[in-house]
Image 1 (cartoon, chains in turn green, brown):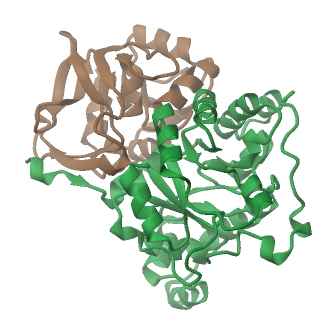
Image 2: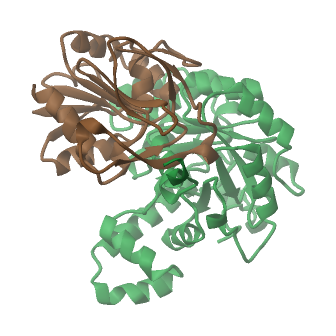
Length: 297
Length: 190
């Protein structure tokens, strides 16, 4: 009977993302920040050396974090720990899997290692989350083996506008396909650049076949609730917490905002006196080469 | 019959879908008062630290405990079972202490060690249950009043019952097998 135990199946990979639903995943750069995130009620942390706002400011090539740094964060908390690898850098992913991280984010926030191919994620026992701007990108990543999707937004800006654009694009395409006659699905798959089987799955379900979080620019409880009302299953908050004046208080408020996203009275209460949010960037002021969301499509 | 599903965080929507498939009225429980008119409660899978913290912040904790002591059946899956236990490690808030078990969280290892397996559950009869374990807790101690419903091949207990309280370390809501839900509904009916 023991030989019938199966690890790394699709169900346990996609299943962990289902357990994270209705939760907040927070970027952290130290063990102390990881503890603050856990205390505030985060469902997971993303172990980084720099938050996206600092990656943006530092320039240069952004790579996987030092394994010792990730391990220190893994030791500090009991909640799942995620870590980022560069798009297409399957050896960084192998290293993260060997470390025992719970989810790998193949992320546009780091400098891509391959401008044509993403990682073939089916080869791994550890599950992957990938970013998307629209349904075609989401389904291509799922075809490669991503067990969880997040909208890209524009990381490190503290500006929710791109996250909204991407979430609306995904939800709108799902609704459209749900009402599409079967004889239009092949052309739709061609236009999306996505496998027909997954397009048919979207039609059947009326949504993505995996959990879909919002990410990239969420800085306030209202931002988080906005993404939930638009259809997100949960949110990633990157620079928004630890680049603000009172991270612990803001972190807890965002956790509550994701649970009570449909309750404006509670949202009003928890939004009070949180201190200064991160300053933020007008995405329209960024040059095209400064945009992260256009990497790895 | 109306079943509440604690909807603070986690896979509550999956439980609600199974309940509705079984023709049972299912409601989300988020705030004090939401338990009114509810005959049984499911605490879903999710992050036990998060759900435990929100149970206190929401003001629901005393209401859940109060209803439990009045005899309302509760079933916890994975994180939910952790919250029903007498003792569990590294939680932010103490568990509810409704089932006399001691828990070690994530004791099978990290996510790469998550697994699925067929389990014999004599009380459900018939074919084995496909059980999905995700960063699952291990039950280290079982009190005398607790009945073990299922064990792993190595003898580790993974499903327990004490009075009207049910705990599973795995996630029946992630499979198409509805027998555990039906079993819980039978506890609520009696």
